[in-house]
Image 1 (cartoon, rainbow, N blue to C red):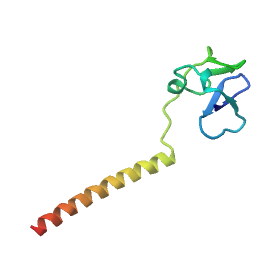
Image 2 (cartoon, rainbow, N blue to C red; image 1 turned 135 degrees about the horizontal axis):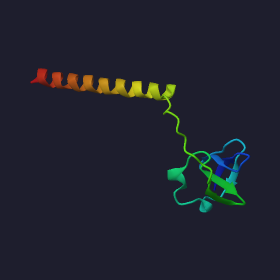
Image 3 (cartoon, rainbow, N blue to C red; image 1 turned 180 degrees about the vertical axis):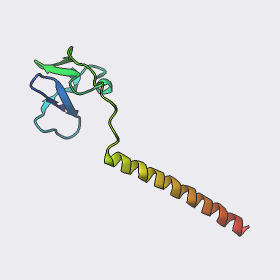
Image 4 (cartoon, helix red, strand yellow; image 1 turned 90 degrees about the vertical axis):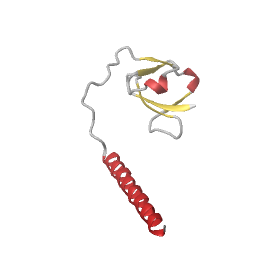
Length: 101
């Protein structure tokens, strides 16, 4: 079982496999198209009369890619900092080995 949110036009706007979503309904995953998880986009699928189908009126968004969120930017900074620290530690370890010889 999973939860989906649908709008007033019966378009699926979101889903959760674990947990819950506000104003969601529970459906059986067996009714999903095989490629649902790989191809999901909000409004691409519809839930009508207990079945899920492709929304024939769906048009993919053509907007510019969004800027990274604050959390994505912080994560990228942390990844860079960790990489720098690893390089420094590696250099210090090499210097210690050479000094000990």
